[in-house]
Length: 342
Ligand code: NAD
Ligand code: DAU
Image (cartoon, rainbow, N blue to C red; front, side, top):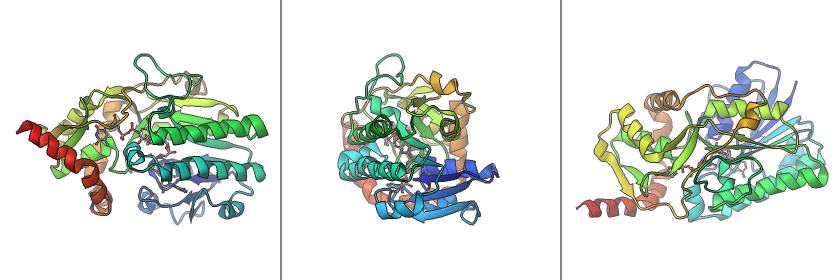
């Protein structure tokens, strides 16, 4: 039996990961530690909470006393917990530094103190910054451009330092943009799908030609699991599906798949410091035996279907405090877009 501590396991990727592990019906025991911020959602683990293989603990990765209770005897830590939305980091970066940097530092200290044999840091391709041509390699320098990616970079550097200085057996995964079921509707793909389903405008930043390398969440979860089991301590693993798409292409596909009116698409003022393009070379994780199973259009169709069927899940989120955030983030931009037309 392996005992796993999964932080951030009530978020988008973390919850998909936990369910994948539990679906395997092995004897593994999973402890989820999640603060349940606005982004965490206990509904994401619905149907699994009564499993004898799962313990859910609401708490902060920065709480050292709590970690002293949870970490002893753990075989592997997967650190998914983070503040994750770039736009929110531009409005307010403090919580990103507190969780992504300081929280990870506390977790590393406790992993070291309690001699945890493996520590997987779930990082992001955003730490590399933007790339005009070609694909990032794990050896490329870290050049973050947003408070979010700078905080995640701080965490990566601490994780590396704990390996070099103290010999903590760490692994870092840097994946590209995930999409799929249970993603918070603040993010591009679920925001556009749910707005299209509600007949609301789709606010496309800048010229809509920014490129992201999209990966279906299940593919990333399998890769993270593989790195956790077979990766080499001290190493970084890029995880990308090679599905580089312009935002405007995705927006149009969402309009097509939802059958919404193309007039809903609105070009709004750009995100400050908006990275133009991300693309990853994932040869290293492929050499461990990983490959993608879901192509972009299949994954997008699946995702649109999931959001169409699970309206109660996302409406509960959108009708809550999210609507204030939405007005703050998009109200003026959408008004400006309308005035430009008129
Ligand atoms: P998410 O925002 O959906 O979930 C984050 C989870 O962490 C939430 O459940 C939240 O409650 C929890 N959390 C936040 N602060 C916490 C704290 N201090 N202590 C304990 N729990 C806390 O994020 P996601 O998209 O699922 O991302 C998960 C991880 O993967 C993050 O580390 C993120 O940086 C990384 N990542 C995400 C993507 C992506 O495209 N979504 C891509 C690459 C890497
Ligand atoms: O690359 C991995 C990263 O992907 C993760 O580390 C982050 O946690 C995750 O949030 C994501 O960051 P992005 O900034 O790339 O994702 P987001 O969904 O916010 O935006 C994707 C693209 O869509 C980006 O070019 C900005 C654009 N966009 C986004 C929103 C929310 C719009 O045009 N309009 C929008 O309303």
